Amino acid sequence: MTDVEPFREQIRSVLDDLRASLAFLTIIPGSALGESAGAKPDFKRGAQVFPVVGALIGLAGGAVLVLAVALDVPAMVSAALAVTAIVLLTGALHEDGLADTADGFGGGATSERKLEIMDDSAVGAYGATALILALLLRVVTLAALVPSGGVRAAAVLLAAEAASRAAMVRLWHELPAARLGGMAEGTGPPDSQAMLTALLVAAVIVVLAVMPTFGFWATLAAAALTIAVAFAFARLTALQIGGRTGDTLGACQQVTAVAFLVGVTPFA
Image (tube, rainbow, N blue to C red; front, side):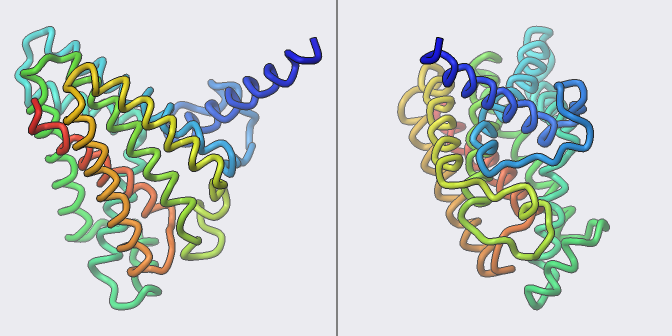
């Protein structure tokens, strides 16, 4: 009994992390997941399950895609519906971060001014353009995978959502907070173990989802492009504002999700 109890405690801890992460990354109310009212999430360890939440989000979008394809909905429309489902489920959390980041990076002359612009809820030309391009690329690349089969395309979508959440965790861990008191500082950052676990979990999900559907080279290309884009975005963020914010975490998720989908499309 003594030997089993630590294992049970670990399972309970992971489930707690999963509930907190689902409430944080989606519009699902924390109360519906058993979260205590007013509880502040702590992702120093809990961010390790972000790729699992990403996979669940991708699964929801993938289910919409498979259903639409089964109903003979055109590929582009099916892909648009799947992406819409994901945006609705996440409350456009990361899309908002991408728009704010693009406005800040493009419109500010100094890091302080960039952060001020990112705090402004208004969407400017840079933000709108980035948001349109990201949504367009997600829909077009996903639609390009549909002729290979709805289930196969859905598997790639699931993997992209998981891998992009791991990239977000890595950025959160790697860069210091660009400002004091922000979301990215107050609920984290993930520690080294959480970051490495997130990367490992995402790698397993990617291999299991993409390798059987599009093969080794597609898996390698998607992973390599995602890693390259995540690395480049981290360097850009450090140069632009000297650290990360909640907006840049969302932007990281968006650009790496696009990179993953782009990496698979040549093999469709």
